[in-house]
Image (cartoon, rainbow, N blue to C red; front, side, top):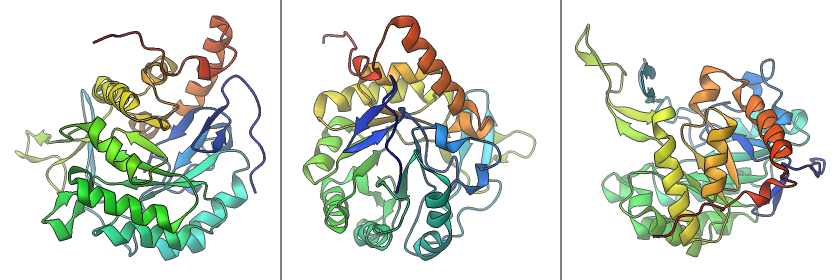
Length: 313
């Protein structure tokens, strides 16, 4: 059982959960937490989103899986994970015994709509789990490989099934390539989502000019890093105008100032991905800098900042 979060200026409530600050580690950044135990004080963060969990183990994409370029990073990990049974037996107990304040959201993936509910139901009563994040950028094999998030009917089914499998908060993670991300967020919320995460990576290709082959073993991959910041901030603002649920803003955050852009655009929480992979302690520094900024600005609660963008269209 987690202790109550302190009531400081960075404390925030979202989807019925109280976070000691709005800074999370994005899915995949901290794996299942254990890997960063000697590097990061995880319990100083608002929380973490685990690496993806699927019903069955996934080997993932061939190496190399990650490559850097001047604008950020590209990766194709292929959602590699040991499967829900191993995560329940070995990873979640470790998180439950090591985190007293940081919240844990489990990232969930699947090949068919029922996979998401299967994982949620299997992990729902595990200690250390505070909620779930559904990665609906996965291809739906029943719909010819179309992303769940790109098909309203598939999205409704995924969210509805997951919602029925748990009373814990359910966030839905959306891709920035969606034709109308605000409308898609509305579909997810109408189907039962408690929150929205924006954004996932953007598809891209980096070429190794020495070999004239793709830099990644899989070929193409997901682009993340600093170049994604304005994309994510715009998506956050659009979604915040369309739905009245908490938003986790992701994409290109390397500093407290970047995080504040998301908060001003309407996010309640933010998550660091690429920055944390380059420097695992970057999230801790963002927390410290946010506290300093609030003190400088006379902000008594970070809630005063959320959704304060002045932009009339």
